[in-house]
Length: 102
Image (cartoon, rainbow, N blue to C red):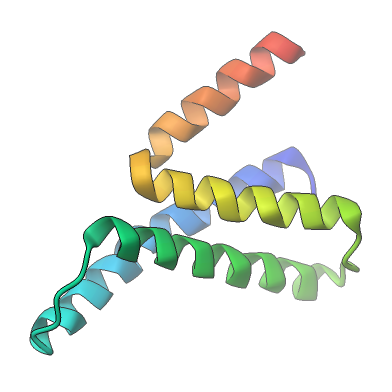
């Protein structure tokens, strides 16, 4: 997985997180269930990041190794973080970090 593919996966998860979270909120509202928005968004982001990571590995026939495990953990963490503070802030931080270390 390259850095560009990783960021594309993060973008996909961040976009899908917003959509899926809103759908789940509507479903829970119809059931008259209470929920905490941040916990719901963080959980959805983590689950989606695992699903996207597994889908990527299946589609590219990539074996799980230590490098892929690091990518998947980073994807799950950054997806959760994006759900909490916003995708734009996470990408801005990554871009600034890359500029300093290139």
